[in-house]
Amino acid sequence: MPQRKQKELFPAKVLTKEEISPGVFTLCTERTFDFIPGQVVAVALTADEEPRLYSIASGNNTGHIRILFDINPAGSLTPRLAQLNPGDELMMSEPFGRFLGTKDPAWWIATGTGVAPFISMSESGLIQNKKLIHGARTPKEFWFSEHFSSSLDDNYVRFATRETAPGIRSGRLTQWLKEQNNLPNNIKYYLCGNANMVVDVRDILVNKGIPYDNIIAEIYF
Ligand SMILES: Cc1cc2nc3c(=O)[nH]c(=O)nc-3n(C[C@H](O)[C@H](O)[C@H](O)COP(=O)(O)OP(=O)(O)OC[C@H]3O[C@@H](n4cnc5c(N)ncnc54)[C@H](O)[C@@H]3O)c2cc1C
Image (cartoon, rainbow, N blue to C red; front, side, top):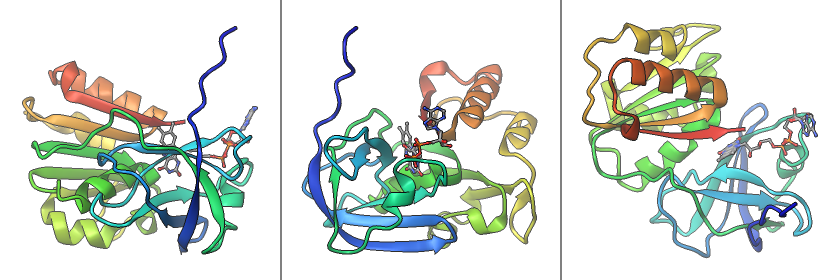
């Protein structure tokens, strides 16, 4: 059986690591490559282990690469990633992927850490003509919400499923999308996050007449 070709990994020094909320981290490494906002990198701690993929969550005009991740307690990589400190090394691939941000008008739709590529797009100057629709369980789980609130204003729409708070809608973003009439069909829709959300949103959009080619999806598995 043909072997899946693994991305080549290169050492990268950790610059900072911050626990932005219990179990959720940003980690910055030195940057040695160009990338297009929306791309991912493969990350591991050693060259001989199976890497995991992470969206780059930083602008392409800085000297570092940021990733945003939450710990999967039963996972192989994230509990160890969370233990890294500045000066430690990890292994990282060059960037790749086809989830590419542009300056064109678009709706960005994310759940949880699926907001990561939109942080990169936003910090890279692609925020004009965008709407961000973000779903999470609780109001505390809207990562980088201050950044998006100030840059997107009313075009930053949040949905929390378990608790409510001022300015945050209650329920699932999929329900809200189902209730929308006249969704713009001449813009791109970028969907990023867990498989259920991405598949459900894609079906809703297609049923509402959005051309399939206008839907760009990145599933975190
Ligand atoms: C394109 C892409 C981009 C991504 N970007 C991000 C991002 O920006 N941020 C982010 O947080 N995540 C992202 N992810 C998810 C990320 O790659 C990891 O899957 C996640 O961080 C968990 O990694 P882990 O090694 O800790 O867990 P894993 O070891 O992968 O385990 C995940 C779960 O699977 C279970 N599991 C593992 N192996 C088995 C097995 N053999 N049988 C049954 N169950 C098993 C574990 O118990 C655990 O519950 C992305 C994924 C993709 C595909």
